[in-house]
Image (cartoon, rainbow, N blue to C red; front, top):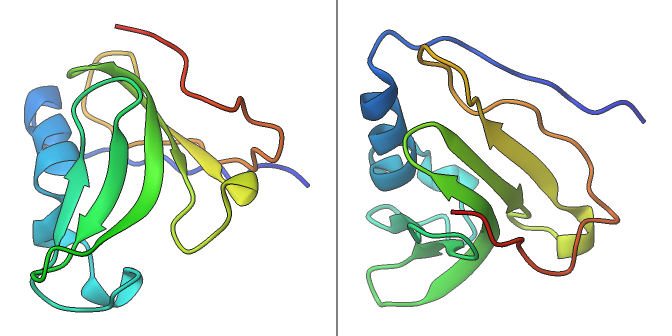
Length: 121
């Protein structure tokens, strides 16, 4: 199966796009597209290589969504994404490394992804 590739431009600086995607996802991510499906939850990108991506409910329950493979703000971000799925069915999202502001792109099936994030700083 061919990977799904999606990319779009955003009208802001690279730094603002990075901040909005990685630190403010709770503001724009629809609650109906979360594990808990509850309003008021927090979406967390742990800001480091091997960090987790997860949701945290108001009661403190955490549900894993993925894991960060590369964290190089504000230019490079890759992560495995397995929201509501087994890690074996994860997809990879990549933040473009070039200039300009584009949202993460290139999602593909990673059934044979590495067992743990590679160290990259």
